[in-house]
Length: 214
Ligand code: ADP
Ligand code: ZN
Image 1 (spheres, rainbow, N blue to C red):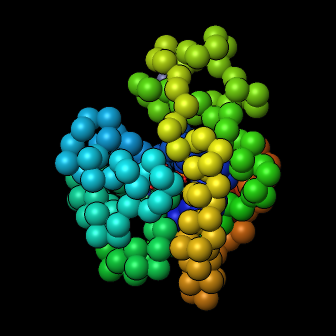
Image 2: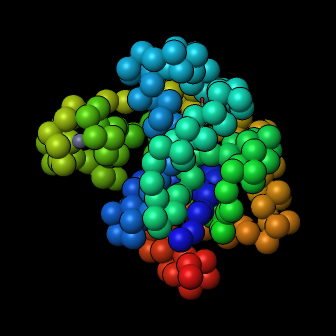
């Protein structure tokens, strides 16, 4: 069993790669962004608290995030291990995670700003199952309709250009310090995420097989 973290700017393809590794290897993705979006959609107390931060492209407060991760891990079984996608995003979150479980490797999925802006502004997501598409690079067979479940595709509120720029700034200022934090622990693995998600998933799966699993 292994626990891995994906760090990287928005649009690096963390969610896409995590879901590929789930399908192929059985690792359970733990995406705080997905958990929050579900809460917003359902109108829960958490969702009401988180929505404004998310729409502005800012981070949701650490104590809220740490609480939802603890609860998720307590109520979801993962025999093979978790892939933390989008968590931790601050040093305080990383320190809290250290108290919760052991981390075996941290993948830095890095991509240039031009590439991530192009990816995010063309991204479409299935309302029903969460599958991710891109209007140019990975279009659905029928425009606006999910190939997998027939659900309606939509553009995330925070995938508008101005919000994307804010999210990139927040990444540089608050999340990028985690790169040194984990590099110093000898856990960081660099992945060139300018490439296609399929290639990234293959490289990461190979790395886990060779170095992290037992
Ligand atoms: P992306 O990585 O594409 O920016 P996510 O789906 O991971 O998007 O997150 C969307 C939004 O949810 C973030 O902009 C932020 O407001 C909130 N969020 C998700 N994870 C965290 C976290 N670990 N800490 C604080 N806020 C978070
Ligand atoms: Zn779908």
